[in-house]
Length: 460
Image (cartoon, rainbow, N blue to C red):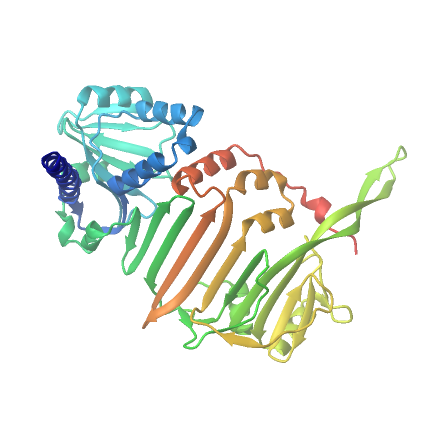
């Protein structure tokens, strides 16, 4: 018996070594490629890690991937048999002078399947007699390819640019360097599912069962977080709450709108937003119609409206803000009402108190200027279940109710260095968050969103 156990243990060990050795080999091969020297940003998709994460989720919760959805997924995979070798890491990169466009290059491992795929989905298939390469585009001209018998260069260009010469250069490895020697070489060792790097900025995405994690680190001399952040103590039961304790530096050479300049001239380093709940209120909506004598008749209709209990507080030069609002005829100081022409959806009230101003939907709301210390200069909390209910948008509620909560924090980690950490939780804690996001996108894509803003404007 002991001998049998030893043999089984040895077999399991060999299988584990082979398994991890195979994936390690794929990682080495995937990172052993050339990239144009003028690449300015890179997106890395860790195919193997995503595959392993979703595979483990499937083994743990097979019911989440059963039925028609499983058949549909299988059919999609079969339809996407493109004859291309999918590496362990899939890289997309943008090039200087080609902003908004992304490129990649893949190997062809099945010419027959690849030819069938091209014939089925692409148009304008033209072969170059000199290079022997072939050019093709999708019918909507947003994706172009140039391919030989062994490789294909792919370009995604939403603006429908002509990228044939760029793709030809990529396929020929013109001005290319080894990826590990480029400024993006550090991406190759990251275990994250998706990573994006641009100059001194890095963002990562990881998809787990019922949870999505997004982190971002970047350098900025325009955002100036306070060394010792503080914030007003907000209600923990809010549908949405956000606070920001930072100044902003504007480059005088840049084109900044007058509205933004005016805001920054008033703003004094702190702002918070809080959506507590909604209350029902009867409002009179006025519309006009013509009678048989073509006379314009006013028609009033009483409707039930949901009014959010919304507060926006800001440390500011209160006198300057008040003067601007009065001079612009945007506020009635006797009532505190902001003009409906400026903010049409809800009646907003304005109030000021020394170095603080407040905009809210509750008339004569009390000021709370007491602040507590914090480690983060930015914080955002969204309770999607409460918010979607309070917002009263049934079309979107049905599509977004898969989301449960969002928590985002921003912190200063060094000189001009900022880090954001964001976690999105889903109602379904068993299905992988990437699969759930794809389903949400498909629902939203098929949803016609029509809002009659005229019916939301109250008569005052």
